[in-house]
Image (cartoon, rainbow, N blue to C red):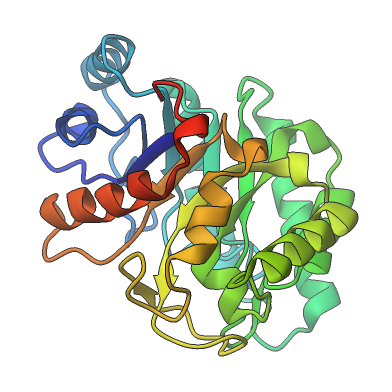
Length: 289
């Protein structure tokens, strides 16, 4: 499988690739700018070239980027404009770096209602994609836990956004194991896993999943609480990860950890989680990835 973790870019974007390689990742996720700022200084050509060169010479197959946490394309206030500018910056950076998967939390309607929020997100993304035809990657709508007025916690909400896309080929889904469980989708037994995946396939289409976040959770089924835990140490346990890692439908996409770390550059916990995950892969499914 193409396994890895979210990597810090401390020391430069290219440093995330070196960190990933040091613990045998074949996929990583990064922030291309400070995730708690609206904007950051533009990428310089030297940094872009170094990142691309290092990636090409590495064993990392997939790199996805995660958008900043301030972005809310459903925001009914003046911060919507800031969100649009920040999301546009994310698209530009992904294109410059050759990153084809840009993970986005859909947004929060902040009291305006689900329908209005989904429509605003779809309209916003359609406008940004139309403005940047050079970006040939995909915005990956992440499944969410359903806290507060956050959208994207039901498969139907994700499907609604995809159905409103003017260029559907520019969109995919990032499935988060912690989030779907918190939202009420059980994957803890083999029957439950297959039932949930069948439901996803019926509502959205399993082929729309282009990345997976492998996170255990501190809270139970339907808790609506987004709190990640180390693999096998939370409410999910090991079995859901075993089912997913041996599901051939996900053998060609990036599967990355977002589990807790002592610091942004602490790789020991990532190493331990990856060891656990690799131990769950059936020998019949190991093909050098």
